[in-house]
Image (cartoon, rainbow, N blue to C red; front, side):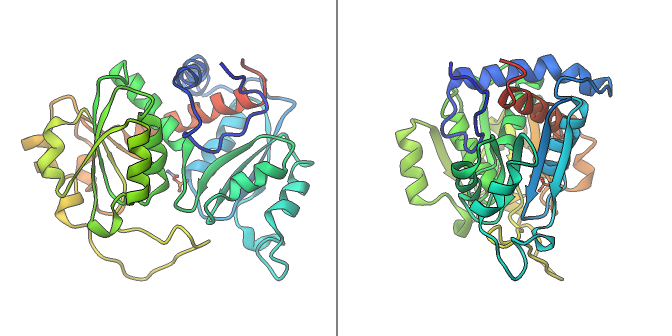
Length: 316
Ligand code: CP
């Protein structure tokens, strides 16, 4: 297996099956630290630099919390407008990371441009973690989701997935690449104008992913062991910020209601959502036995602890 030390985490396209399991092993080893709300000194000599060019609650703070749990330090920015990259100068990715690499030992970057973290990794002498790039990928979120499935179901192989939402979403791309390393089938349910592109479908066929598409979640939810949901009422992920006063409602085809769960879902199906949500999962679903998104949020810290420990060479 390739070493994780010094490695960038940019895409799940280049993750091998045994590497997924190694990351999950390290996460399971470190999980008690987070569960017991302890801080240790594993990364006490290391600093994380956060470079967030787009809003985030979970990804940025989970990386920061992970660093604190492991005794490390954090610096960085959460609004590029207050840096030279977001003002008159529009400082380039190259010039920015050539500074950031002197301020810490690992960078986590979220950007509105697809491929921006890859560009950063080209120039940085320290590892770069992709915290979401435009419509591109969101590898650390899907590693979190797969780890959640492993903890909840005891396995990943042999499970049937339904993914509901906007298939342009970066999480969906990382999910599809990741599942190609497991014995899983997946059905994608999305509005026609948010469906998988033909180019991406051709790529998934080359990866031998067992996938299909459906129009309404009601048609396919009965076969799912895992339902992963993203909004279809979405901002434009190619913008640094997208504020709207009014937005539409989620059509029934892409909504997970208590009635749907009670009437059609398997008894032990689990429901994932990386959050934030709109109205695609109504609040009254939270107390059903299917919801796992708060567990997913906790695991988000655990997964980032594992990734930081690995890329910083403190776990092998
Ligand atoms: N799941 C996720 O990426 O959330 P944030 O946008 O809050 O980071």
